[in-house]
Structures are given as C-alpha cells and as structure tokens.
Image 1 (cartoon, helix red, strand yellow):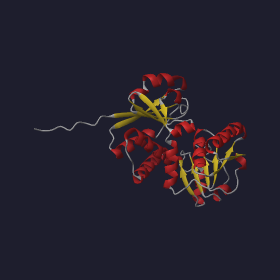
Image 2 (cartoon, helix red, strand yellow; image 1 turned 45 degrees about the vertical axis):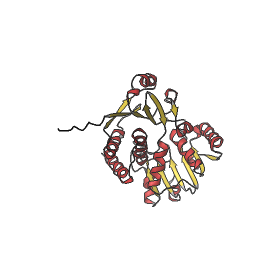
Image 3 (cartoon, one colour; image 1 turned 90 degrees about the vertical axis):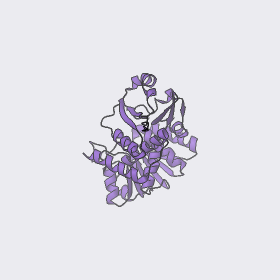
Image 4 (cartoon, helix red, strand yellow; image 1 turned 90 degrees about the horizontal axis):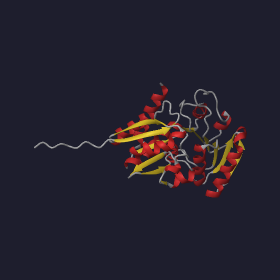
Amino acid sequence: MKMTIPLKEKKHFCLIGSPLGHSVSPLIHKELHRCAGIVGDYTLEEIKPEELESAVKNKLLSYDGFNVTIPHKSSIIPFLDSLSSRAELFGAVNTVEVKDGKLYGHNTDCTGFLRSIESENISVEGEVLILGCGGVSRMFAYECAMAGADITLAVRKQSFEKAGALQDEIYRKTYRRAKLIKIEEAVGEYSLIINGTPVGMFPNTDACPVSRETVERSGAVFDTVYNPLDTKLIQYARESKVKNANGLAMLVWQAAAAEEIWNGVEFKKEDIDKIIKTAGERLGK
C-alpha cells in the first residue's frame, strides 16, 4: 500500500506599516524560509495609523506572525498581550508573535544590530557616537549603555529637548550617563560611530552626517541607511580602511531573529551572508 506524506501546513506572515514602498522584506523572508525549510509566505500590509486598531482585531490575528515598521512600532503596543523585556525597555516593537489568539511583542532590531556588527568584528565599547535620537537611535543608545560604552548623542538643535529626555531616561534605567552635543560638534576620535538618521539616504546621496576627518579617526562605523548601500559615510570608512557595516545587514539579521521567534529555527552565518548579498543585488537594480 502506497503511503502519502502529509504536506506541511503553510504559514502566513507579513509586514505592516505605511508607506511600505518597495520593501525588500518579502525577498529576505522568502530566502530565510528556503534556508530553514519553512512552508510559508510573507506579504506587505499597508495600514494607515487610523486603520491600526481595526486591522489588529479583524486581520492580523489570522497571521502566524508579523513585523511592524513606521509608524506603528510604538502605537501597536496597547493592542498586544505582552512585551519582551527589550521591547518594553525601548518602547518599540518590530516583531509580533501570534499564538493561541494572543499577540506577543518583541524587538529584534537590537538583535539585528548586534549580530550585524559582530559579523564585521565591530564591538560596542569605548567612546560611541550616536547620531540622532529617533526610534532606532534609542535602541542603539540603550544597547551601548548596557554594554558599558561611553555614549555621546549628537542631534540637530531642534531635537535637543527630545534628546535630553532620552539622556535622562538612559541614566534612570541603566545608570549610564550620556553626553549630548549638536551634530555639527561631532568631531574627534570615537571607537564607533552609529548613524541613526536618514542623512545620506536616496535621493540625498551626497550628504554625510559627520566629516570625513572624523570618520578617518574612528575605530568603526555603522550606518542604518541601506539605500544606497554605499553611503558617503560608508565610502569614507571603506576608503580609510575603517571597519564598517550598513543597515542591510541589520535588516536581514533582525528578520532572521523574527523567524527564530515565529518558527523556532536557527540560521548559519554563511546563509545570512548569501541573503544579504541577494538583497543587495535587488537594491542595486
């Protein structure tokens, strides 16, 4: 008698945000599924702020998990049943696990950041310059503070009040003091420069948030921008033989961390490196 092997149940995942544009997340998760043998799909759900509550109640519970991007990373929190320690600390969620009708919020941006710099042998120590004080810069600041780094926050004049609040919050939660300066004062020698601003992003590709001289004197550079892949900041670092990593590596690693939460899988560094290359080729077209 011929036996039939049951097909694996297909799982469904998505990214919510607005606008989503030409996101490479579906490509990244498709490749991650292929590597891990997961039968699933990953789609884009464009959801405006005023539609979020309805989407959570009427649509998102039907998924096995979903990612969250701007502008919902904080506004999704009231609709979740629980938060991981990192998501609670940062006040931001980018990954939601759907299980037994409940929603569990996580933050894998931090994992993506730490794994991407680790893959380039970049450490979070010494004098760290963080450019910006938005959502992703908050995560950088907390991770660096908890690693024992000496942090300098460099922001625009109009963001001083917001950055000051972050400065106080970091000290209250980690007992680490952060220095606060205007971004034009970001000169000197740093162990690591982290760009959490959109400066250098397409179409303003000739812009760089700090001077070439400051980059040349740094130990390493991390740029969250990945369109283009080679921002001026990354170009200056590469030409000066300074260790560097861009936001695409972080994007792929945080996606891998999300899949680990949803599916209990693990990924090899060589597989992640191939996916980073594939996504980079797609962005380069």
